[in-house]
Amino acid sequence: MHGRVKVKTTLEQQEAKRKEREKKLELYVSATQAALNKREAGQLDKEALELTAQILALNPDFASLWNLRREVFLALGAERSEEEIRTLYVGELSFLESCLRVNPKSYGTWYHRCWVMQHMPEPDWSRELQLCNRFLEIDERNFHCWDYRRIVTQSSQVPDADELDLTSSLITKNFSNYSSWHYRSKLLPRIHPDPERHGRLSEETLLSELELVQNAFFTDPNDQSAWFYHRWLLGRGDPPLSIRCILADLEVPFVTVTFSHPVLVGSDLILFIDERPVMVTWKTPEGKEKPSLVWVCDVPKGRLSGHCQHKIKVIWKDGEAKKECSSYPGKRVTWFRDSVTEDKIFSLELSEGKSNVLQRELQSCKELQELEPDNKWCLLTIILLMRALDPLLYEEETLHYFETLKAVDPMRSGYYDDLRSKFQMENAILKMEYAESNLVMVVDKKLTRLCHVDHLVLVSHMCLSKNQLRSLPRDISMLLSIEVLEVDDNEVSHLEGEWNLPRLEELSLQCNKISKVSDLQPLVSCRRLSVLRLQGNPLCEIADVRDQLKAFLPQVDTIEI
Image 1 (tube, rainbow, N blue to C red):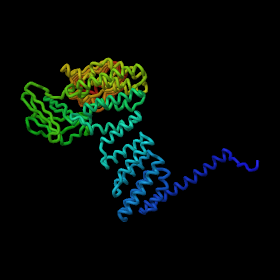
Image 2 (image 1 turned 90 degrees about the vertical axis):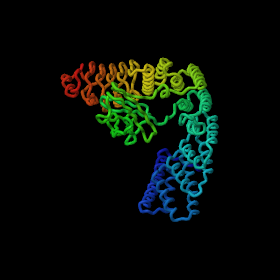
Image 3 (image 1 turned 180 degrees about the horizontal axis):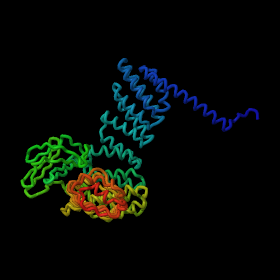
Image 4 (image 1 turned 45 degrees about the horizontal axis):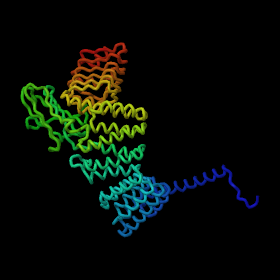
């Protein structure tokens, strides 16, 4: 037994480790307190840098200590020569690199490195580019490093084409490099922009990218990176701000304006009637001051008459956007709106070449889906391709693929239901325009939510019966022309927001889940509502519900329970 090392028991090892941890913790806490005390005392010196370095070397995510180091550098910068400060900053970069080795994804460390480079005299951006390359070799999906790299390339004026070549190289090595795909989506619109659609690609580049990404998801169908990039390629881009619709009701009277993006109007929207500016107060349909797609104003009495001809015009920000319409004697309402079909609001602008490529992709994805029947990315891409090609032609087939997708990926069935509802509402709006009608029928389509209500400002009659709606959202207040609204056989338990619908006369909510009178609060402001149908709701079981409803909604003549 002599000469053999005594092996500690497990309990002894645990106790030794505990004591070692306690000792480290004590040193950590004392150094932290000392650093914070120096900050409180205003002692922003090199000792503060040394104290914080001890802690940050162990824990680079201590944001307060990075803040303290920046304060020290600013204080020393006012006292030291430029050469001395440069030496300090160079040392700081070396220290930061050691911290990044401890945690390559430390928010505080990358942010502090960016701050140092922006404050040090004559920064060496080429060295930073090499550092980014080294860390991306270790982890090609380190998005902190990718973000920093974008700052470095902008500061050192690296050509976008060189960065695009880098993404091509990285993607070729690994199709799963999501960060490279994302960076590519930022570079290509700058290098090969579509002259008509901001943020999108020229057609030649788009077709080339579609081929590249198709190779990627056929190589590894279960990797999501390429599928996400493909979805971006099918996007419609971000159109410039415009006024899509103007509606003037001469009877009430009011004027409604619909924008392509939510805006806060203030005094930037000016109403002209017969070429004369009119002082009005713009508000959202709910009457709230917040960014909105739809704005409405009451017109002063005497400015609009159904017996005269009028020219109504609105101008946004000195002509950045404008729209006008004309009324004629005998007309109660006048309006002018952009065409959702001509402006391709819900679809892509397809040339023959682009259409052929997408058709081939659709066929290829269907073939892949036969080989990979449980691949949710493939199923979703098939749906998006059909939407891009012809949403109405593929309507029934799209619904079939949604059911398959929900079966394959039941955890996200709610998301797929909402996406399907969005597409169903788009189809209904397209059909309404093709029929030149103000009637919307979306019956028995399994709707779970209402979308694109801002496109329904002119609708007078809407039927949403036999769906799966659980509430009627506050966006209903945008239906400023609605006269009849049918929402029977849904799961509606309450109405949201403040509707203020000036023309609503008839509302049917039969066979829903409304349980109390207060669930109908938005109807209080609908002054023309005369018919309300509530049969088949739990509310009908309340003993004196008719009296409660009469007191709550005195303007309603007929209440059917």
